[in-house]
Image (cartoon, rainbow, N blue to C red; front, side, top):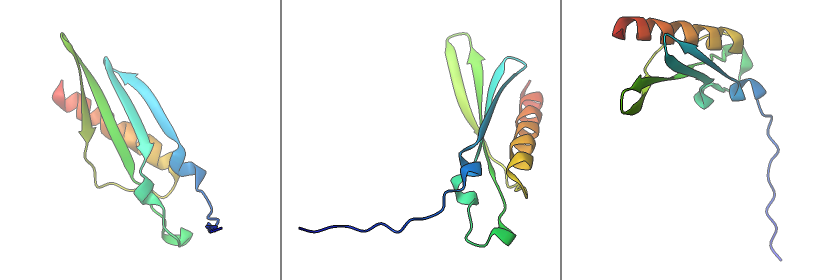
Length: 93
């Protein structure tokens, strides 16, 4: 009988956090990107993954908002991601 051993690894629960909001009729979802985790916590930067949903007359459209911003803490990442999303919506509207 063959058995497989898995090496236990720490899970950064901050990466699983997300924030949702409605702004000017658009739905915003900000998640912390899974690519944000580094082995050396001293240099860990958190990058937001931002998705906005535009309501249309015939349905909706989801748009990924590209950003190169990164943040030092998960809370700053979520807050900064919301600010980036609101700015994106303001420029489109």
